[in-house]
Image (cartoon, rainbow over all chains, first blue to last red; front, side, top):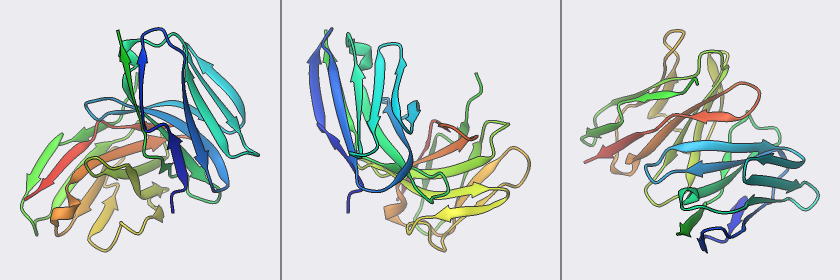
Length: 110
Length: 111
């Protein structure tokens, strides 16, 4: 059973394009996280949210708790945004651990 | 900026050997985690640790695995008798009440 589903699995965009990555989850959650995994393997937290919308630079994350859905948007994409973007959730009642989606491989071409 | 560190970055071991992966979490964090990522697969939760005891563990975290916080700074993952299928990247993470901060990972190769 896949508790966290992401789409698309792979995404190629031209520099400057607006990008959207979607995440759906099937369990009750206390928080949803968007993470970035670099080609070398390192994982960086981009956002942690439990409602509404957050913005950091060119990145925007939204969540709809009723629909169990979140989106990550990247405005004015740049080749340095190329990475794997991972959606992860903290299930309700858990000890804060994360359940991960399979990730979206984003490639931004110059 | 404070960061989570992990050593070694790469460990090669023979099947059946014991390995200890080490992590130094961010100093004022209270929650600690181990995750693993088998090559080409998604990241999986292993164990969470709070107040010097395991908070939760996954089905993967069986009797061959153990965690310790032997002093005020280190957080270790021990695998007692490694199997080929333990080959993976192991990530340590720590948090306060908010987002988790991940270490760079230890790539474990079991031959």
